[in-house]
Length: 65
Image (cartoon, rainbow, N blue to C red):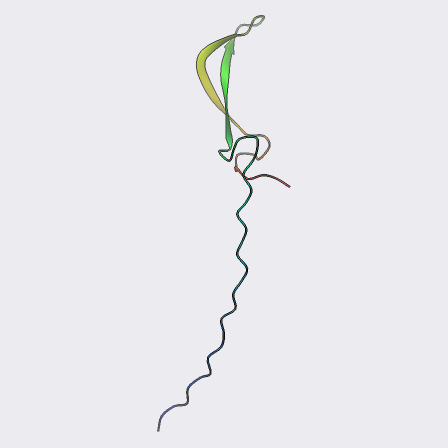
């Protein structure tokens, strides 16, 4: 004796999750590069660079609401 087939059900499709918007301050990298300045009065700019965390998105690269 054969077993009865189960009825097939439709799969529920969930809506696609939207891509998060990139941060306009850092263009989605999460970091800023700044020139290093030396000197108390004149603040001469050197050839060196340092990276800093983006304060708008806290380094995630996604725009906040």
